Image 1 (tube, rainbow, N blue to C red):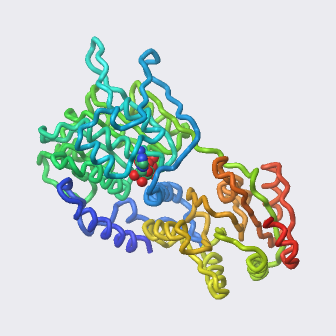
Image 2: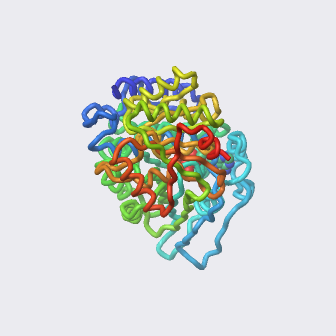
Image 3: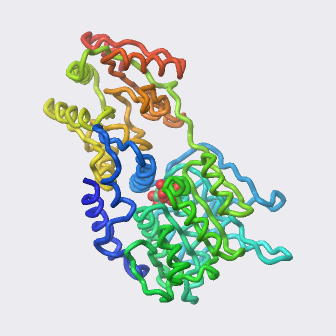
Length: 491
Ligand SMILES: Nc1ncnc2c1ncn2[C@@H]1O[C@H](COP(=O)(O)OP(=O)(O)OP(=O)(O)O)[C@@H](O)[C@H]1O
């Protein structure tokens, strides 16, 4: 499946990229399927559409892309940014307006044209650091390096794009800023932001260092900004000598957590970084920060400043949780219909374990007259993003999905979540984290919610008990044959 649909998606992306205008010179090649996806058919798939091996890495990149596509505005957070400065004695700057950054007019215009009124939380601190003049030491000048971590949608990409555009000297016709991303699609997405923000600064040109974008050995790039994937960037810097790494003054490593999940990318990134001069500013961004990401970050970003923005914690405090006993999936469906018959549900998300169940359930609900959206594993990222977008806009009232498809997606307005199948890990134990993510709410969106868990076996009852124990919260039984009782739960 995937190769074709990915290829189609890429064709679509490329046709948009071609129309970007003056900024694109080395636009992405046509008809070249993204290399990392071409292998997808070789990944072993189990019946429910979840991959067994190698799934995590593919999923991470796809999830990142999906998040990028659905975050059309900033994700707000009430958490405070944590800043760890390399030099704790230097004053800590943060800005509340873009004007304070003294950007070139052309760039400020680009920023406002994108609808940004003021810097996001992470930008308030990251931008002054990234735009600061290098610090002078007796041994030479040193840039302000940065490691920044915050969840998707908090404004990291916009921040480093602005930093790259600000640092470029358009009169110099060589590569000055280098940005690497884990996949072809993620590189294209970032490229789009560069083009959008640089719309009024046409002197600055952008090149895509992605597989299939063939340039002759020794051909010299004239473009000042290069965005690409590690393998091709490495080739361009070393084997083909298209980029002179010694002339790079800003190096951005985006999506570090996704990067290290892909074999080979970590080494390639380190090899690229080793070719850059000491005075080059190194910037690394990541949505999550496990130990492995941190270790990698320390290797590629010397003497870093560190900015972290915690993800808002989800809780079950404002959620009413119930379970319904059934004997099979048909009975679960009847229970679901009874719930729909008794209470008014604005929008619901229904989680199934397998793609097949999700498809079946969506069809049954449709027969009952519901307007249903189905998120399914064989869809491209673009198709999934479009479905989530429609659901967010309220065009469909029910979203049926498998866990793999919806992992990491926030649809905040949903008040009812049905676990048609309970979340479990590959060993058949309760997957508490997923349970919390499916039905939990952040303090800010502390609206009351309702979660109904469908139980059809001893095993699923066991999972439910594990969940109760883990969260130390009792989940009450609901008799879906008793309409009065169902009505009560919505009060
Ligand atoms: N200061 C701002 N004001 C308003 N919107 C902004 C601002 N900065 C970024 N955005 C918008 O918010 C969304 C998320 O921003 P951005 O893509 O930079 O976040 P991110 O942290 O890099 O997330 P991801 O890794 O998923 O791309 C984008 O639609 C972007 O245009």
